[in-house]
Image (cartoon, rainbow, N blue to C red; front, top):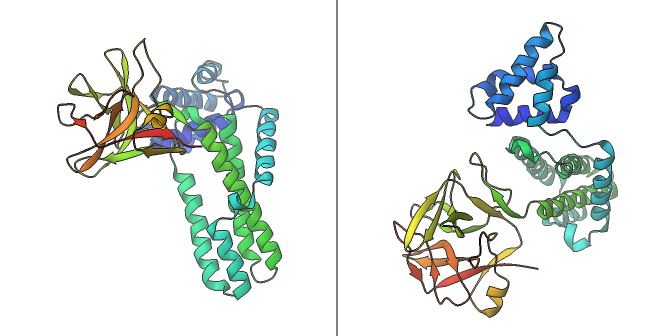
Length: 336
């Protein structure tokens, strides 16, 4: 999917009303070998061919406008950017003084520049590369995402510049490192705000911060998921490549291809008690049935994700073809 998503990003970044169709040409051939987004690829290919003939591909552009939402206006971007920059400036020291920054303070006091520069440079470039290669759904290009993208790259650039001043101007090196850290931490906190909740999984794309809750028989990590079975939203688990979820209902285990996954960083697994059930995370309710709490039970040497209700003394998990009950279990709760 990488070529398709790069192509989607190029289309959206250009804006479909003034799309630079030629800029998409290099990705088109590679993207055609991938399975998804074929309708958009055909539209772009047709538009390119008509452009080569000196025509204005209005029909294709209009259809792309329906399939690919336009990029937000600069004014909208600016409002979000100013908000995020203000948050970065207002961070408490304890929020932005990361271990890497404290390491820099020690390096400047001790004068051990060479090893630190090499190590830190490698970490910054690794972060930049990982970010550039990360996949994203075509519908994830929002106002907030554009601003985070801009400030994330700016934060990394500040860290790079900080390394240039290590020996010549230690104070400037610290100032730039602080600026970079503030931006990167603010971007992370802002992303958490908009990337928490239950997300429908499409095409094997897990949400930004899936919640780990256990391991399958072969050791593969299990993440919190939910699917509708018999009119109830039932918590369960999904695993890479995130094509299906496994849930339990009425004594049986079910595999569901239509499912959601939980994305959240501010959660914790705790022992079941009255307070835990009050704070328990539940998938969105459907129908009139009482929502299940997300739980995990210990079964045959491993934690498996399942469901529980306040009156229950056990957690029910999908395993094999059945729904075993676990007396040793945890409840997933929201942390402050």
